[in-house]
Length: 338
Image (cartoon, rainbow, N blue to C red):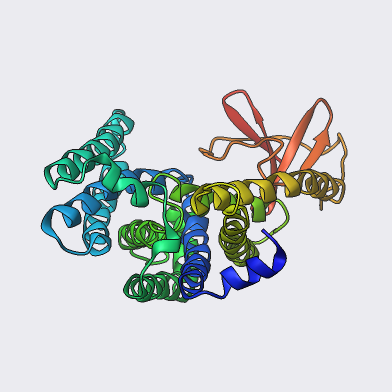
């Protein structure tokens, strides 16, 4: 396809709607995805996407909007997932897996009852943003606006709960409420991205831009802003690539968006390794072997390593890590403080 043909294609009404929907999705999905990554729940979006399949099927069966039925079912599924996760039983992963597979199987079964068969779910499983209608664009815009307004407006509270829930609870924040709010916003983001990248690929757009921004950003706020920018570039860029290749083959926008996001991560990863190496060289504590050790009996959940993001200081035959204003190192079952 020549450049003139591509410009002509991008100027058509259906492509204008697709570009707007892709941009909104690219901004909203990484915004809430930043909090999921911070809480080590990167695959929560994937699980909600499976549950939302049943919501789409209910919309097809009842003849109502699949988007709104998916929103309702995805929110209910997200709340149930959050409740199961909060209980923290040893078989919690098994319960979540049953919910995921049940959502996908229920969606295929109900779609069959609706007379469409599994093929009727194709546009929702892998996305079909170029066929999006004006009504669906307005719906996407409204849902994306809700996600962005709550995510950015409640940024201090959501960050406190995601990074240190015990401190947030002591500070008087309703930790359970904000955890449920993040789960609900993740469910809404999944349905926002449903027509752009599809329910089976939506988690990639929520996580990969965040992982890419973490390679270069040092603060949570910078990571959030960079992830939103990268998500917007990946969504719009992937759609344009798909349109450019459409003259030779049928290329769905969803996979091209995800692959472009992965390509940006691969391009920034060496830069992230170099930046982390430089930060370790400029650690705020001197590398000496005379600093005394004090055994700490406090429980410490964080596992330090080469990619943990905390400055490392060589100390004799081991490595200390600078964390929350102090310097410590794991030794067997305890931590030594300096």
